[in-house]
Length: 358
View 1 (cartoon, rainbow, N blue to C red):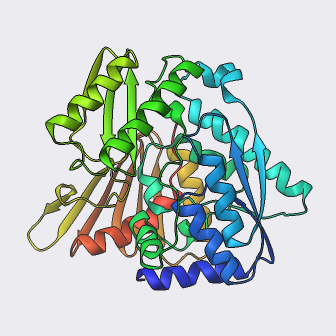
View 2: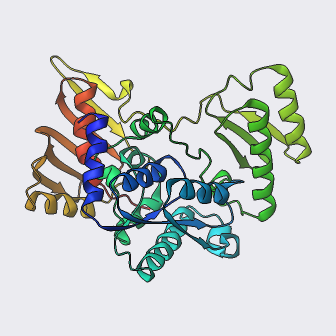
View 3: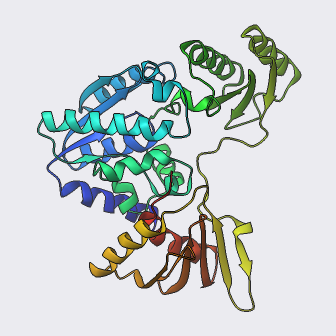
């Protein structure tokens, strides 16, 4: 399917539900879902969750976009810094955060008589290290973009071509602090101030400041605005005033439009290619196998002939007619593919069934 066909599929999915609640951040994914739901005349309730540690203007933008889109909007507030499991910033912080967020959104939706809840997770999210995504399965949150096989770049392209505004600063600021370093209101305020300052100096619309041992590492979606001596000096001075000991610049852009298949992941054979992809997390082989087996029983034509080797730690199957393997350590291999496009098409059929280990 091309992007337009995928968008039409999302509309068809939304049409199947007369009433929907949407986890709404005002970012690209949830904004497009709200826009499409309005286009097909869904009774939509957008619910924003304010954990008190989002970037400046997050809540105001959510209110503004909901009003502009003409949709009902509710806000749930909770101060995550008062919750030890989150303030202590362990490796499970995102899992705990999403558990609290989705449970609260589901309860609010049910209280308002909205029994179906959707979110903006898309196919690209499934290759990233986002343990919180497991909570969407636990709380039975639907993800129309995953069902329609939409990728991040396709969502952004549609929004930009149709001039639909969305926020590019919707990620929790606690994710900027190194895992196991305590998150405090002082750190959150300092990160927020510095990111806003850098945005103003560079005209970048996506800035992330990573903090570790009082060292700041700057990530931008476009480096051009910062690469002159005057701007660099200004940024360093401001961050030093904010009491950072060292200021670094990450030369890799924080581009969210990650390609599902990278060129180096394709091995060239005699007459075909082989995909060797490594996901940034371990895979629960038993649970993934059960989910794939259920899909086969429900006559999913894309998936066939599954064999599970629990003791060795991998699953063997056919996806889109291609021999594929899923390994416990996060590796996925796909054999005898013609090109990068076909590799992506097969991978997209596999990713939604994978369940990770946290």
